[in-house]
Picture 1: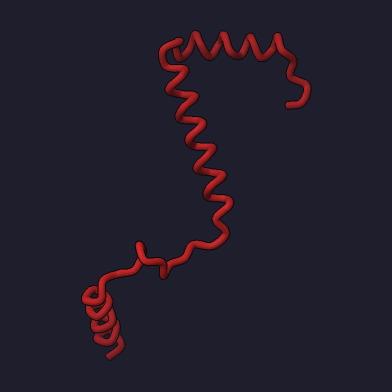
Picture 2: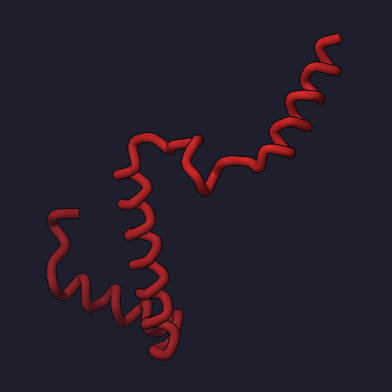
Length: 74
């Protein structure tokens, strides 16, 4: 990848413009940028906190799950 020159990049750009069209290129670039940002954000989050406030289940749901587990163990 280090040996790609400017003329080769221009040829690739022309081919991409012919395939996708000039109107769709900004949308494709925006989508690619968002995907890369989300990937970087995901890689920076080493550990997901399963007990955070937004991931915690309501008490009645937890009580129901505990009852179901107790019934299964019988």
